[in-house]
Each structure stands twice: as structure tokens, then as C-alpha cells.
Amino acid sequence: MAENSGPDGSRRPWLAPAGWYGLAVLLLGLDQWSKGLASGHLAYGDEVRVLPFLSWKLLHNTGAAFSAFAGDGGWQRWVFSGVAVAVAAFMVNEIRKLPAGTAWYGFAYGCILAGALGNLADRATLGYVVDFVFVHYDWFRFPVFNVADSAVTVGAGTWIALLALEALRARSAAR
Image (cartoon, rainbow, N blue to C red; front, side):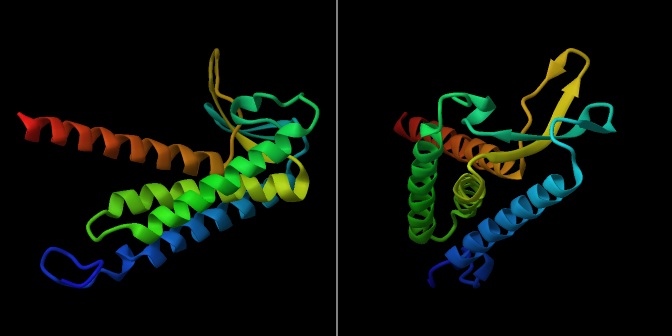
């Protein structure tokens, strides 16, 4: 059976590694385009309500998730950039090694790769990550985020779910 073919032997070129790299490039482009749009049209810190629970609010995050370490003097730019490079390299390698029939892993890895590269691009060129999506309702205020953050979250969530399913299947098979 050809690599990246379906169980019936038919070719599924969109399952090939190039397809998952393509997903990453698409999400990376969307991330950078949306950050450019936000930076060009929003005043820093001002909130523009879109829906009762969604606003655009331009912020610059020099820290990690939820602005952790944001005020720590600049070291975090290089440490988080290094982490992003390591994660991106790991994801590129994992996508390259994917066997046929593992589309959900390709999806997860492609999303994580895009998110890592999207925030790395900001840190490398700007010194901070551009965040602008603000989800809120009544007393609830989620930290402002971006498309890259969403891609990492969706990718990591998918990967965790896949690993949990594998563990459950292994446990069932062992009984």
C-alpha cells in the first residue's frame, strides 16, 4: 500500500506531510494578517465591542501565556523564542514521520507548528506578541489572545485527546 493512502489503497495527497505543512502556512498567514489588521486599525488598549461576549482589544504581550513574566526585563523574549524554535522543529519532524492514517495527528501538529511560528515571528520582529481577541461576559474576562494562540490551543487539545484515546485503547486491549 502506498504511503499516505487510505485503507482501500486510494491516494489521499491531502494527508501527506506537505498538506499539514500547508495547514501550518495557512494558519500562520491568517495569524500574521489578522495581527497586521489589528495593529493597523485598533488603538492600543481600546476595546471595540463586536458581540456582547467578544471585543477587539490591541495589546502587546512581552511575556508568555496570560502575560506571565511580562514585566521581567526582556530575557523572556529570547527564552520564549528559543522554546518556539524547539517546538517548531519538533513539530516539523513529527509531521515528516507521520504514517498513513494519522490525519488527526497531522492536524494537531500543523496547528501547533503554526502557533509557535506565529508568535515567534512577532517576538523576533517586534519584541512582543500582538494580541487582540478579547472574550468576556459579565464578570468573566479571558486573557486577550490571537490566532496563533488559538491554533496552539486547538492543536494541543487535539493531541491530548488523541493520546488519551490511545491510552484507553491500549488499556482495553490489555484486558
